Each structure stands twice: as structure tokens, then as C-alpha cells.
Length: 130
Image (cartoon, rainbow, N blue to C red; front, side, top):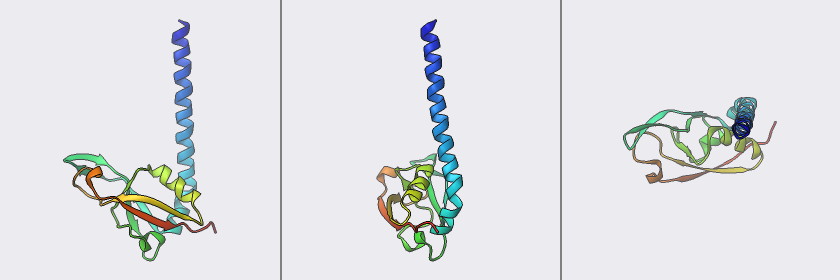
């Protein structure tokens, strides 16, 4: 009986930590997303695309604003951002204010597996806070 109680308490603690981390990420995203969008001139998306014939949700650079930081980089609207979640991406953008942030993308849309698409590095200089 003690081992079941110990497992239940441990599981509750782990779920609590996961919940706190998720809440922290959401709060960080909400606190910075609008200003980051204005500063960089882009918006993200999370469309479903067919990858090797199967629908999969991906993280994309949905649109860019003319003459914004992302528009001046080699990113293309619809590019799929690789190796980082949306929340981590926004946290990285905030952490790199006043510096260059480099991330990888592949061509968006339906097609072959993401690993078979050509990765392109994108470097953007993140404006400092105003």
C-alpha cells in the first residue's frame, strides 16, 4: 500500500512540474508575442500538411511584414521551423534581443519527410527592447 501511495505522490509531483513549466511557457509567450511580432514583422502558424501522405501539424513562419527583420532574412512564408517548439522559439527570440539568433527551416507544404528536405539556416538580428 505504501508503494502505491509513493507512486501516486511521485506522479502528482511530476505532473505538477510539467504543468508549471507549460504555464511558464504560455505566460512567457503571451507576455512577449505581440511585441515580438511587431519588432520582427512575422507571425507563426501551425497548419497540418501531408508529409509522406500523412497529416502532421508543423510550426511555420506564416507571414512576414514587408521590410521587417524576417522579411530581410532568407525566410519564406510557409517555411517550417525545425528543431524547436513555438514556445521555445519565442523564448529564444526574447533571449537574443540585441543579438543574432540562428535557426533552421525547411520548405513548407505537402511533400516528403521533413528529414529529407533541405535545411536552411536563418539568421536574424533581434532588435533590443524599446
